[in-house]
Image (tube, rainbow, N blue to C red):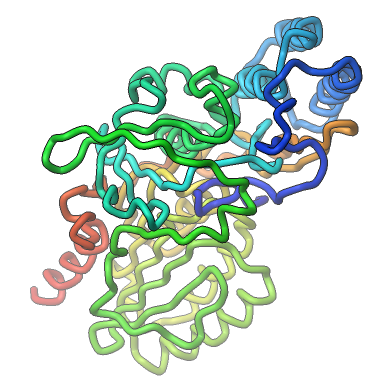
Length: 428
């Protein structure tokens, strides 16, 4: 499958040139010009035809007549829309196609975002990363943007979130979407693209509001950010055979292998890694394996199957109950597929949250660009059934949400559960 996105960490699709938002061009928040109106009419016609032709089953959820009427309505309203409000209209409609790999997503453009990273713990939005000059807000709870409460932000953004397949991916996409300047402006939450007021609740209960400046997605990469301390793998040693997107750690006198599989490499790299992994785990007589897919937004699940093949070649592993897979709401697309396959092929125990992608549904994203605007549109090419029954996300064997109090102390309660399970079993 193609890489999906999301994590601020995970990008839905590659950045492209063409239609872009820009805080240096104020007309992006003004009504479309006559020329833009004509170009967008042509682009919308192209969108309708291309989706119908390329999607495996475009009308699996949305009614064909309704879809066409909505596109006609949007074309008729172009003279009263800005580029940001037009994007909202198209995102709202495309979401109703009903699969997470069909998207009209802002990540395909040069967009602007605010310099913070959010994570949902239970129902609280916590700041886990922020531009360095405001690092005192790390751990604070976000309570409003431009006076709109979190509940109101949920209400406004829910119909337009892209890459959503269930309630778990909706939670993740919400945290990623409300920091995008174009979205906040298009929904009439913020008055411009340059800055917005964010209100936080501090640990002492006081509320604190601050205006944050937005940065283009390219400028953002050059910002100095501070993050809450990442849980330390104090019991593990990093292995030199690690490759991009897949870090191997060994712990407990080499008896436990921890694979932080956070994004997909190409097949050739995984093949080389697999050969080295087989030799290492055999030489170390490793017994337990933990595969961490919690921050993996997708790629090619056949690459992940190569990893499964490598592990199957290691007879000294504890094949009865010694393999684990960690999952989360950010486990999407191919990572979700591999989670199911590891349960089937490796007899692995799944621990953590349900996945953001569904095991039965439309996946494998293709994409095309609209000819005038250059906007990137994604669509589903395949229908997969990785389970006999359809569930909202792959349901873990051990359901365990991240714990805020432990997270802010730099502790990983989900990984700790696995390590404790291994300790108890080996003790007995």
